[in-house]
Image (cartoon, rainbow, N blue to C red; front, side, top):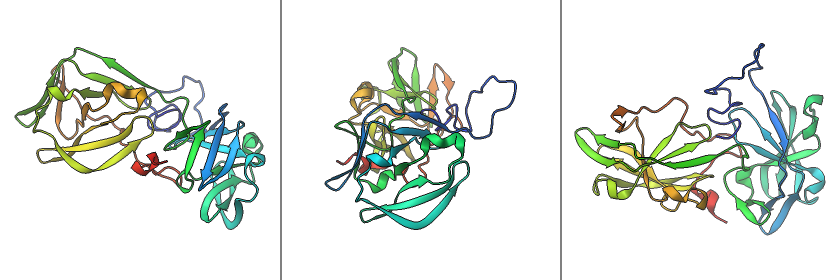
Length: 281
């Protein structure tokens, strides 16, 4: 997902490799100017408002936005006694924001090579009420400029089976290509057996596609999912269904698909736990 998450180039488990004579370091951090106005809101107050945000890509993590201290409201930060240590970037000081503890941090002993992050502060995504680019809310984490989704029509033959039962049979699936992921195949509802999918409670949230519903298939829990109201950028697959090939049998042109390693999304870190509440204004 993007530059440093899932199986992307800087993730630490990339499916590709850099063609260099000497091996690269085990971990590479990448910082760059976001070049977008970004704002942070807590309650009815704008905590930060900046056109000079730096985005940090760290292996295995979603990108994090760092704001100049000069663009942060003076009265909202309270220094805490808590400090931690980042393996590359050194000692980290923590701050409360309003009544929220451990809600922001900055590096206070940066090595010279990371000076671009000096006098900058990041906010824990889940502790703030909302982040915005201009007047539009950004949900989940800072937008990754390297994350891309392409959706393509195809006439390939896709069949989904639950044992001997045919669950879906289509020659008009969509294939969704998403940065850091293997292709995912989506089937129109008309090509799925109407009673094959049993809706289950619980949704997940993708910051690039929206809210996903899940379905059991026979005795196989959460073996399929759909975005019933996918975001406009991926509207082509809105309410189409995709199937997990390690839970049901999915055949593409008679070739059985398998779940590729590293495809599970595991939220982690103080600002990286994603759930449906992220979409609430």
